[in-house]
Image (cartoon, rainbow, N blue to C red; front, side, top):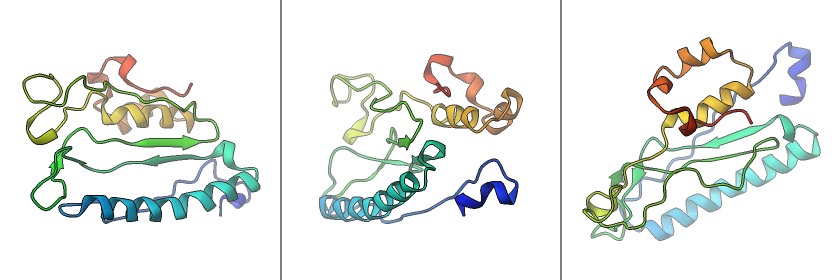
Length: 164
């Protein structure tokens, strides 16, 4: 489908793929390893195919979850709902190899200003950060990005990714 973009008269395609099973209230180690194996089994051939077709420089992949997990286990060797999740962004033109956000010195409530009870971490990078750079890369105007990300004006520009 991506190869037919010009014939279809479109500048960009957006595809959404969902993978469930990350709500790991028990047996987090086994469940997470299985989910990562499944994720990798889809990502690796997709990336290789876009490279083979000469499309990789025009691809960006964003992984995200709507919520995070606690760092401390619960009684079922699992984790519970939390804040401060992680995301990854990969693509042919992505200036990667970085971890963005503030990594806590301590994970203990009262010792770190980012740690809450049971390993719940307060996020330091806004959700809008990821999407601003992607919107710019896709060619949206600043006015369009303001409509897509109405909260981005609440953050310091240094917290938001840009196309570069």
